[in-house]
Amino acid sequence: MAKIIIDSQEIECRDGVTALQAALEAGWDVPHYCYHPGLSVVASCRLCLMEMKMPHPKTKEMGWAPKLMPSCQTPVREGMEIRFNTEKVKKNQENCMEFFLLNHPLDCPVCDQAGECHLQDYSYKFGKAESRMVDQKYNNPKKDIGPRTLLYSDRCVMCTRCVRFSQEVSGTHELSIVNRGSRAEIDVFPGLPLDNPLQGNVVDICPVGCLLDKDFLFQRRVWELKRGASVCPGCARGCAISIDHVDEKVYRLKPRFNPEVNDWWMCDEGRYGFKYIQDKKRISSPLVRRGLEHTTPDWKDIPAILRYRFEQFVKEQGGEKVVAVLSPFMANEEAWLLATFMRDVAPQASLVMGPVPYEGEDQSFPVKASGDDIKFTILKEKAPNRKGIESLLESLGGSTLTFEQFIEKTGAGDFTAAWLVGGYPKPWVEKDAAKLAGKFDLLVVQDIFENEFTAKADVVLPACAWAEREGSFTNADGLSQPFHWAIAPPDGARRDGQYLFEIVGETGLFSAARVREMMAKSVPTLSKVHESQRKPVHAH
Amino acid sequence: MHKIATRIAADAGRLEDLDILLETARNMGMMPGLSICGLPDGATFPIETIVKKFRSELETSINAQPNQRAEDLLKVLN
Image 1: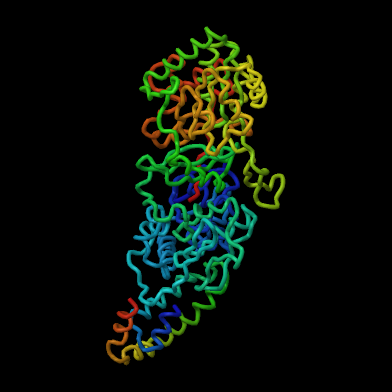
Image 2 (image 1 turned 45 degrees about the horizontal axis):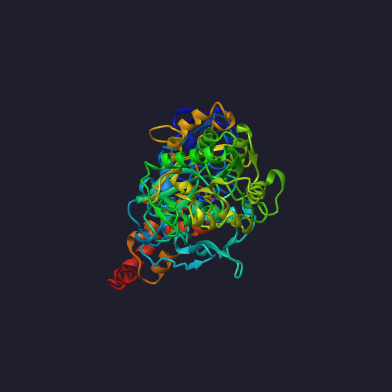
């Protein structure tokens, strides 16, 4: 921990950081464009310049150096003194802002970045009120550089963050600077579009509205969006994300800083993988079948109906014929509640780990890196909570099976009552499993989309997507991270945790924290969740 | 700077343009070394010296422009 003096105030900061990082973490708003804690330092924008005390070359006395130093490139040293609140620094900030805006089009009314744009924010705080540019501005073209991104070169401030990202983090080198001087632009090589699995991050790090997400283009103004913290369910990595939503609709996902898992980044699969939440084909209401008829009972009766049905079944056929399939898309708390109910009603009931989808291979970035140089990995295991369900099954003990064993045993007639949990965004019922749908005398299916099991089920419960639920996922490294709901479940559905909470016999509102306290005795490993302790390293 | 200089050369400059030129030139290199490399110094020093040393000549040429030329041109551009 080094002690430095900024604007005559002494602050403590971490060792080895740059002066800019120390100032930002201590609460100073120092304007900067090209600096990003996850990328190399270039000091090209010159907006973060500060005054620093340095020894006079002749007398060796410490005095304020007449030349301003870039704070993003100066590492902190014990006892360093710097200033941001002087005339010189302010004049420099004003003049740099003027240069940035010289050729900038007046696009705020149509620009997606309005509201989270650093040109807007810094002009307001540090810039000049009026523009003196009366000549014609250079009109750089708007480009379509990839299947999911647009590049509006007239808005670019040449901070080169996107270029450095494609060189250092994704390792794919698609973006580069072409032309020189005031005609410089960012561009891709003709025929090689910006198409790597991490490319959505360049839209996040672009401080202005130059790199745009085609998916989010013109969808909504950012100040209308509300932001909720969550964890991505795309793969077992469990990247920390934020969900931007309003009016019960999710508009976009952005990464959150998490030094243990994903730093500042997230992959495209997770970023764009929320569309299924809005799919019209989702199961929208609960269903109870009796013979050829079906009814839609009230949600307050459903826990009682389910308990009655299972208790009846156990009386008639015995508890060892009962099985529950826990999907790796369930939260730890929900799975625990369901397992507790099952074992309560039928202590010999079997618990099964649901099928875990695998796609392709693990991908690590930068593309040719290995070992410590790897900055980001996309795992091939495309479910968020296999590890959590596995730990749960281990701790609870009793009869636990793999999905293959479940298929075998059901085929042989060993199980005739089942509660299947799905929640997969893609179709998950394979042929061998589909054949079993008719084998159950009592089948409860909790899923998002219809499939062969829901068609034959006695009770169908609409499951909710992760953005509508609360709980925690345990990632592939064993880290349990909490996630919170952002939007309400669709009309007719209810949060899975709520009715599972009621079925276990509790009353009141389901809260993941409360269930974790209840879990502490039987499953201590899952009852503690990890929240990143390090302050979010400032990066915009 | 290039745009302003071309405009002055085309007889459409204004008196404020000289001040803008000077200030812009100073901002690019408040002292030699404020920017990341030496190129801006090469761009700003000629402008600074010309405007400083030959200011009266520049002012005379601006005042001798056909009337309204600057305002007309700027109206078209904006």
